[in-house]
Amino acid sequence: MNREQIGAIGICGSGGFALSAAAMDSRIKAIATSVMYDISSIGNSTTGEERQATLEGLSQQRWADFENGEPAFQTSYPDAPTEEIPEGLDPVTEEFYSFYGTERGWHPNALGNVTTTSMLSLMNFPSLAHISEIAPRPILFIVGENAHSVGFSETAYANAAEPKELYVVPQANHVDLYDQVDKIPFDKLETFFGEAFGLE
Image 1 (cartoon, helix red, strand yellow):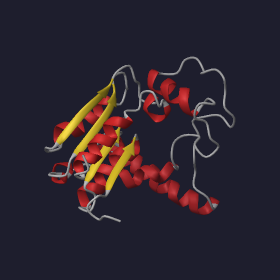
Image 2 (cartoon, rainbow, N blue to C red; image 1 turned 135 degrees about the horizontal axis):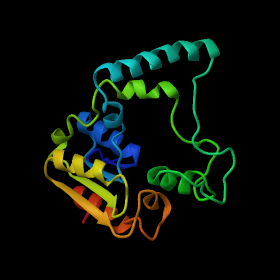
Image 3 (cartoon, rainbow, N blue to C red; image 1 turned 180 degrees about the vertical axis):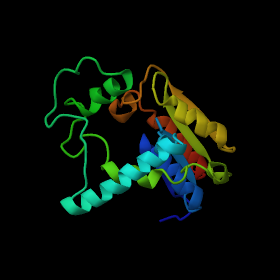
């Protein structure tokens, strides 16, 4: 193993986690994200009484989880894949359902969301607070032209230091870059890591 050729690739929420990991672990020499989500920015989007009420509710849920012997978990998708997307969903939910709720990406272990109390771990600090300190290691942000999540990558890109690149995949939405192999820019990823590791 070459210790100078360790890279990280993160998709959706894992994109934010990969950047956070690289900010603290200098062994990671190059980072690529695809349709990145910064989940901690969602958890830190409230302040004051609203935040305190959420924290209180989640703290009490920990007692309930202990008493029940298992964590509470609210699913977003059916126990079996459906052929049709339900009507009346907002555009973001509909897009995710088109993947996770249908044969395309349905799996019994991926029915949506996390345990109810998981957000507590993401409400105490913004995970990308030190993104600028990743430099001079390079970052590649891949986004879909039509992805609802593009704002997360644009914000992270703006806060990151050079070298960095924002690469837009034409006619791709968020979930397209999960599984549509004709749209996932494998060549771009290969070139990015090849250059980062001096293989090109």
